[in-house]
Image (cartoon, rainbow, N blue to C red):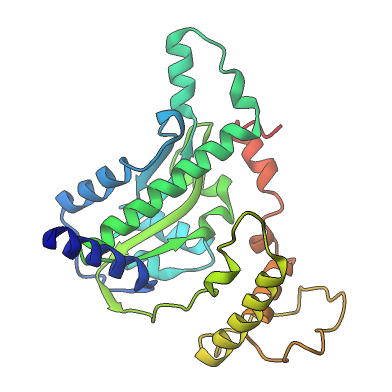
Length: 274
C-alpha cells in the first residue's frame, strides 16, 4: 500500500505541477529506448473501437524541422528539442483494413470518423507527453502545425486520410516556465447541469489571478485584426488578464490563427466532413 501511495503521489505531482518548456538543450539527446517507451505508453491510451487511428511522425531531419517550425509560427525552439513528433489523425489504416477485408469504407465520408481519429490522437499525444515527463524530460505541444497542414503533409509525405493535428517537443529543459494557474474548479465541475452563473464568477476570479501573475507581461495579443462589438462591461475591471487575452485570441481574424481554410484542406486530404 505504501508503494502504491508513493506511485500515486508521484503521478498527481506530475499532473498538477506540469509546465510547458520552450527552452531545450540542443546538445543533449534522448536514448532510443526512451523514445520507444514514450510511444509504447501512448499506444495504451483509450482508442475508440480500438481503431488506433493516429500516427506519430518523429522528425529527425533538421531541414524538415526548420521548415515545420517556420510554418508553425516561427517556433524555432522546435529545432532544439531532442525529439519532435508530429502527431496525426490516421484513417489510412482503415483504408487498408476495409480494402483487405473487401468492404466499402462507408463511414469515412462523415465528420464522426475524423472526430474519432482526432480524439484518439489527442489522447495518445497526452499520454506520450505524460510518459516523457515521468522520465524527467520537458515537453511542449505545438498546435501551429495546423497553420499549413497541406505543406506539413507534403514535407512528411503523408498519404490521403492522414493529417497533422499537433506537434510534441520532448527534450532536456534549459528553463522551465512556472505552472500556470487554472480556472477555479467551480468553473469546470458541475452537478447534473451546466451552471452559467458559476462559470461567469469563475472567469472573473481567474481573470484577476492571471492579471496579477504577470504571465502576460510583454505577451499582449495584438488587436489590429480584432473587431470590437461593444465596450467591456463596467462591472469587470479593465485589466489585461485572461478575459482580454483570450478574447483577443479567439476573435482574431489572422488566417494562421483562425485557420478558416482547415475544412477545405482536410477534405482535399480525403477526410469526409459531412
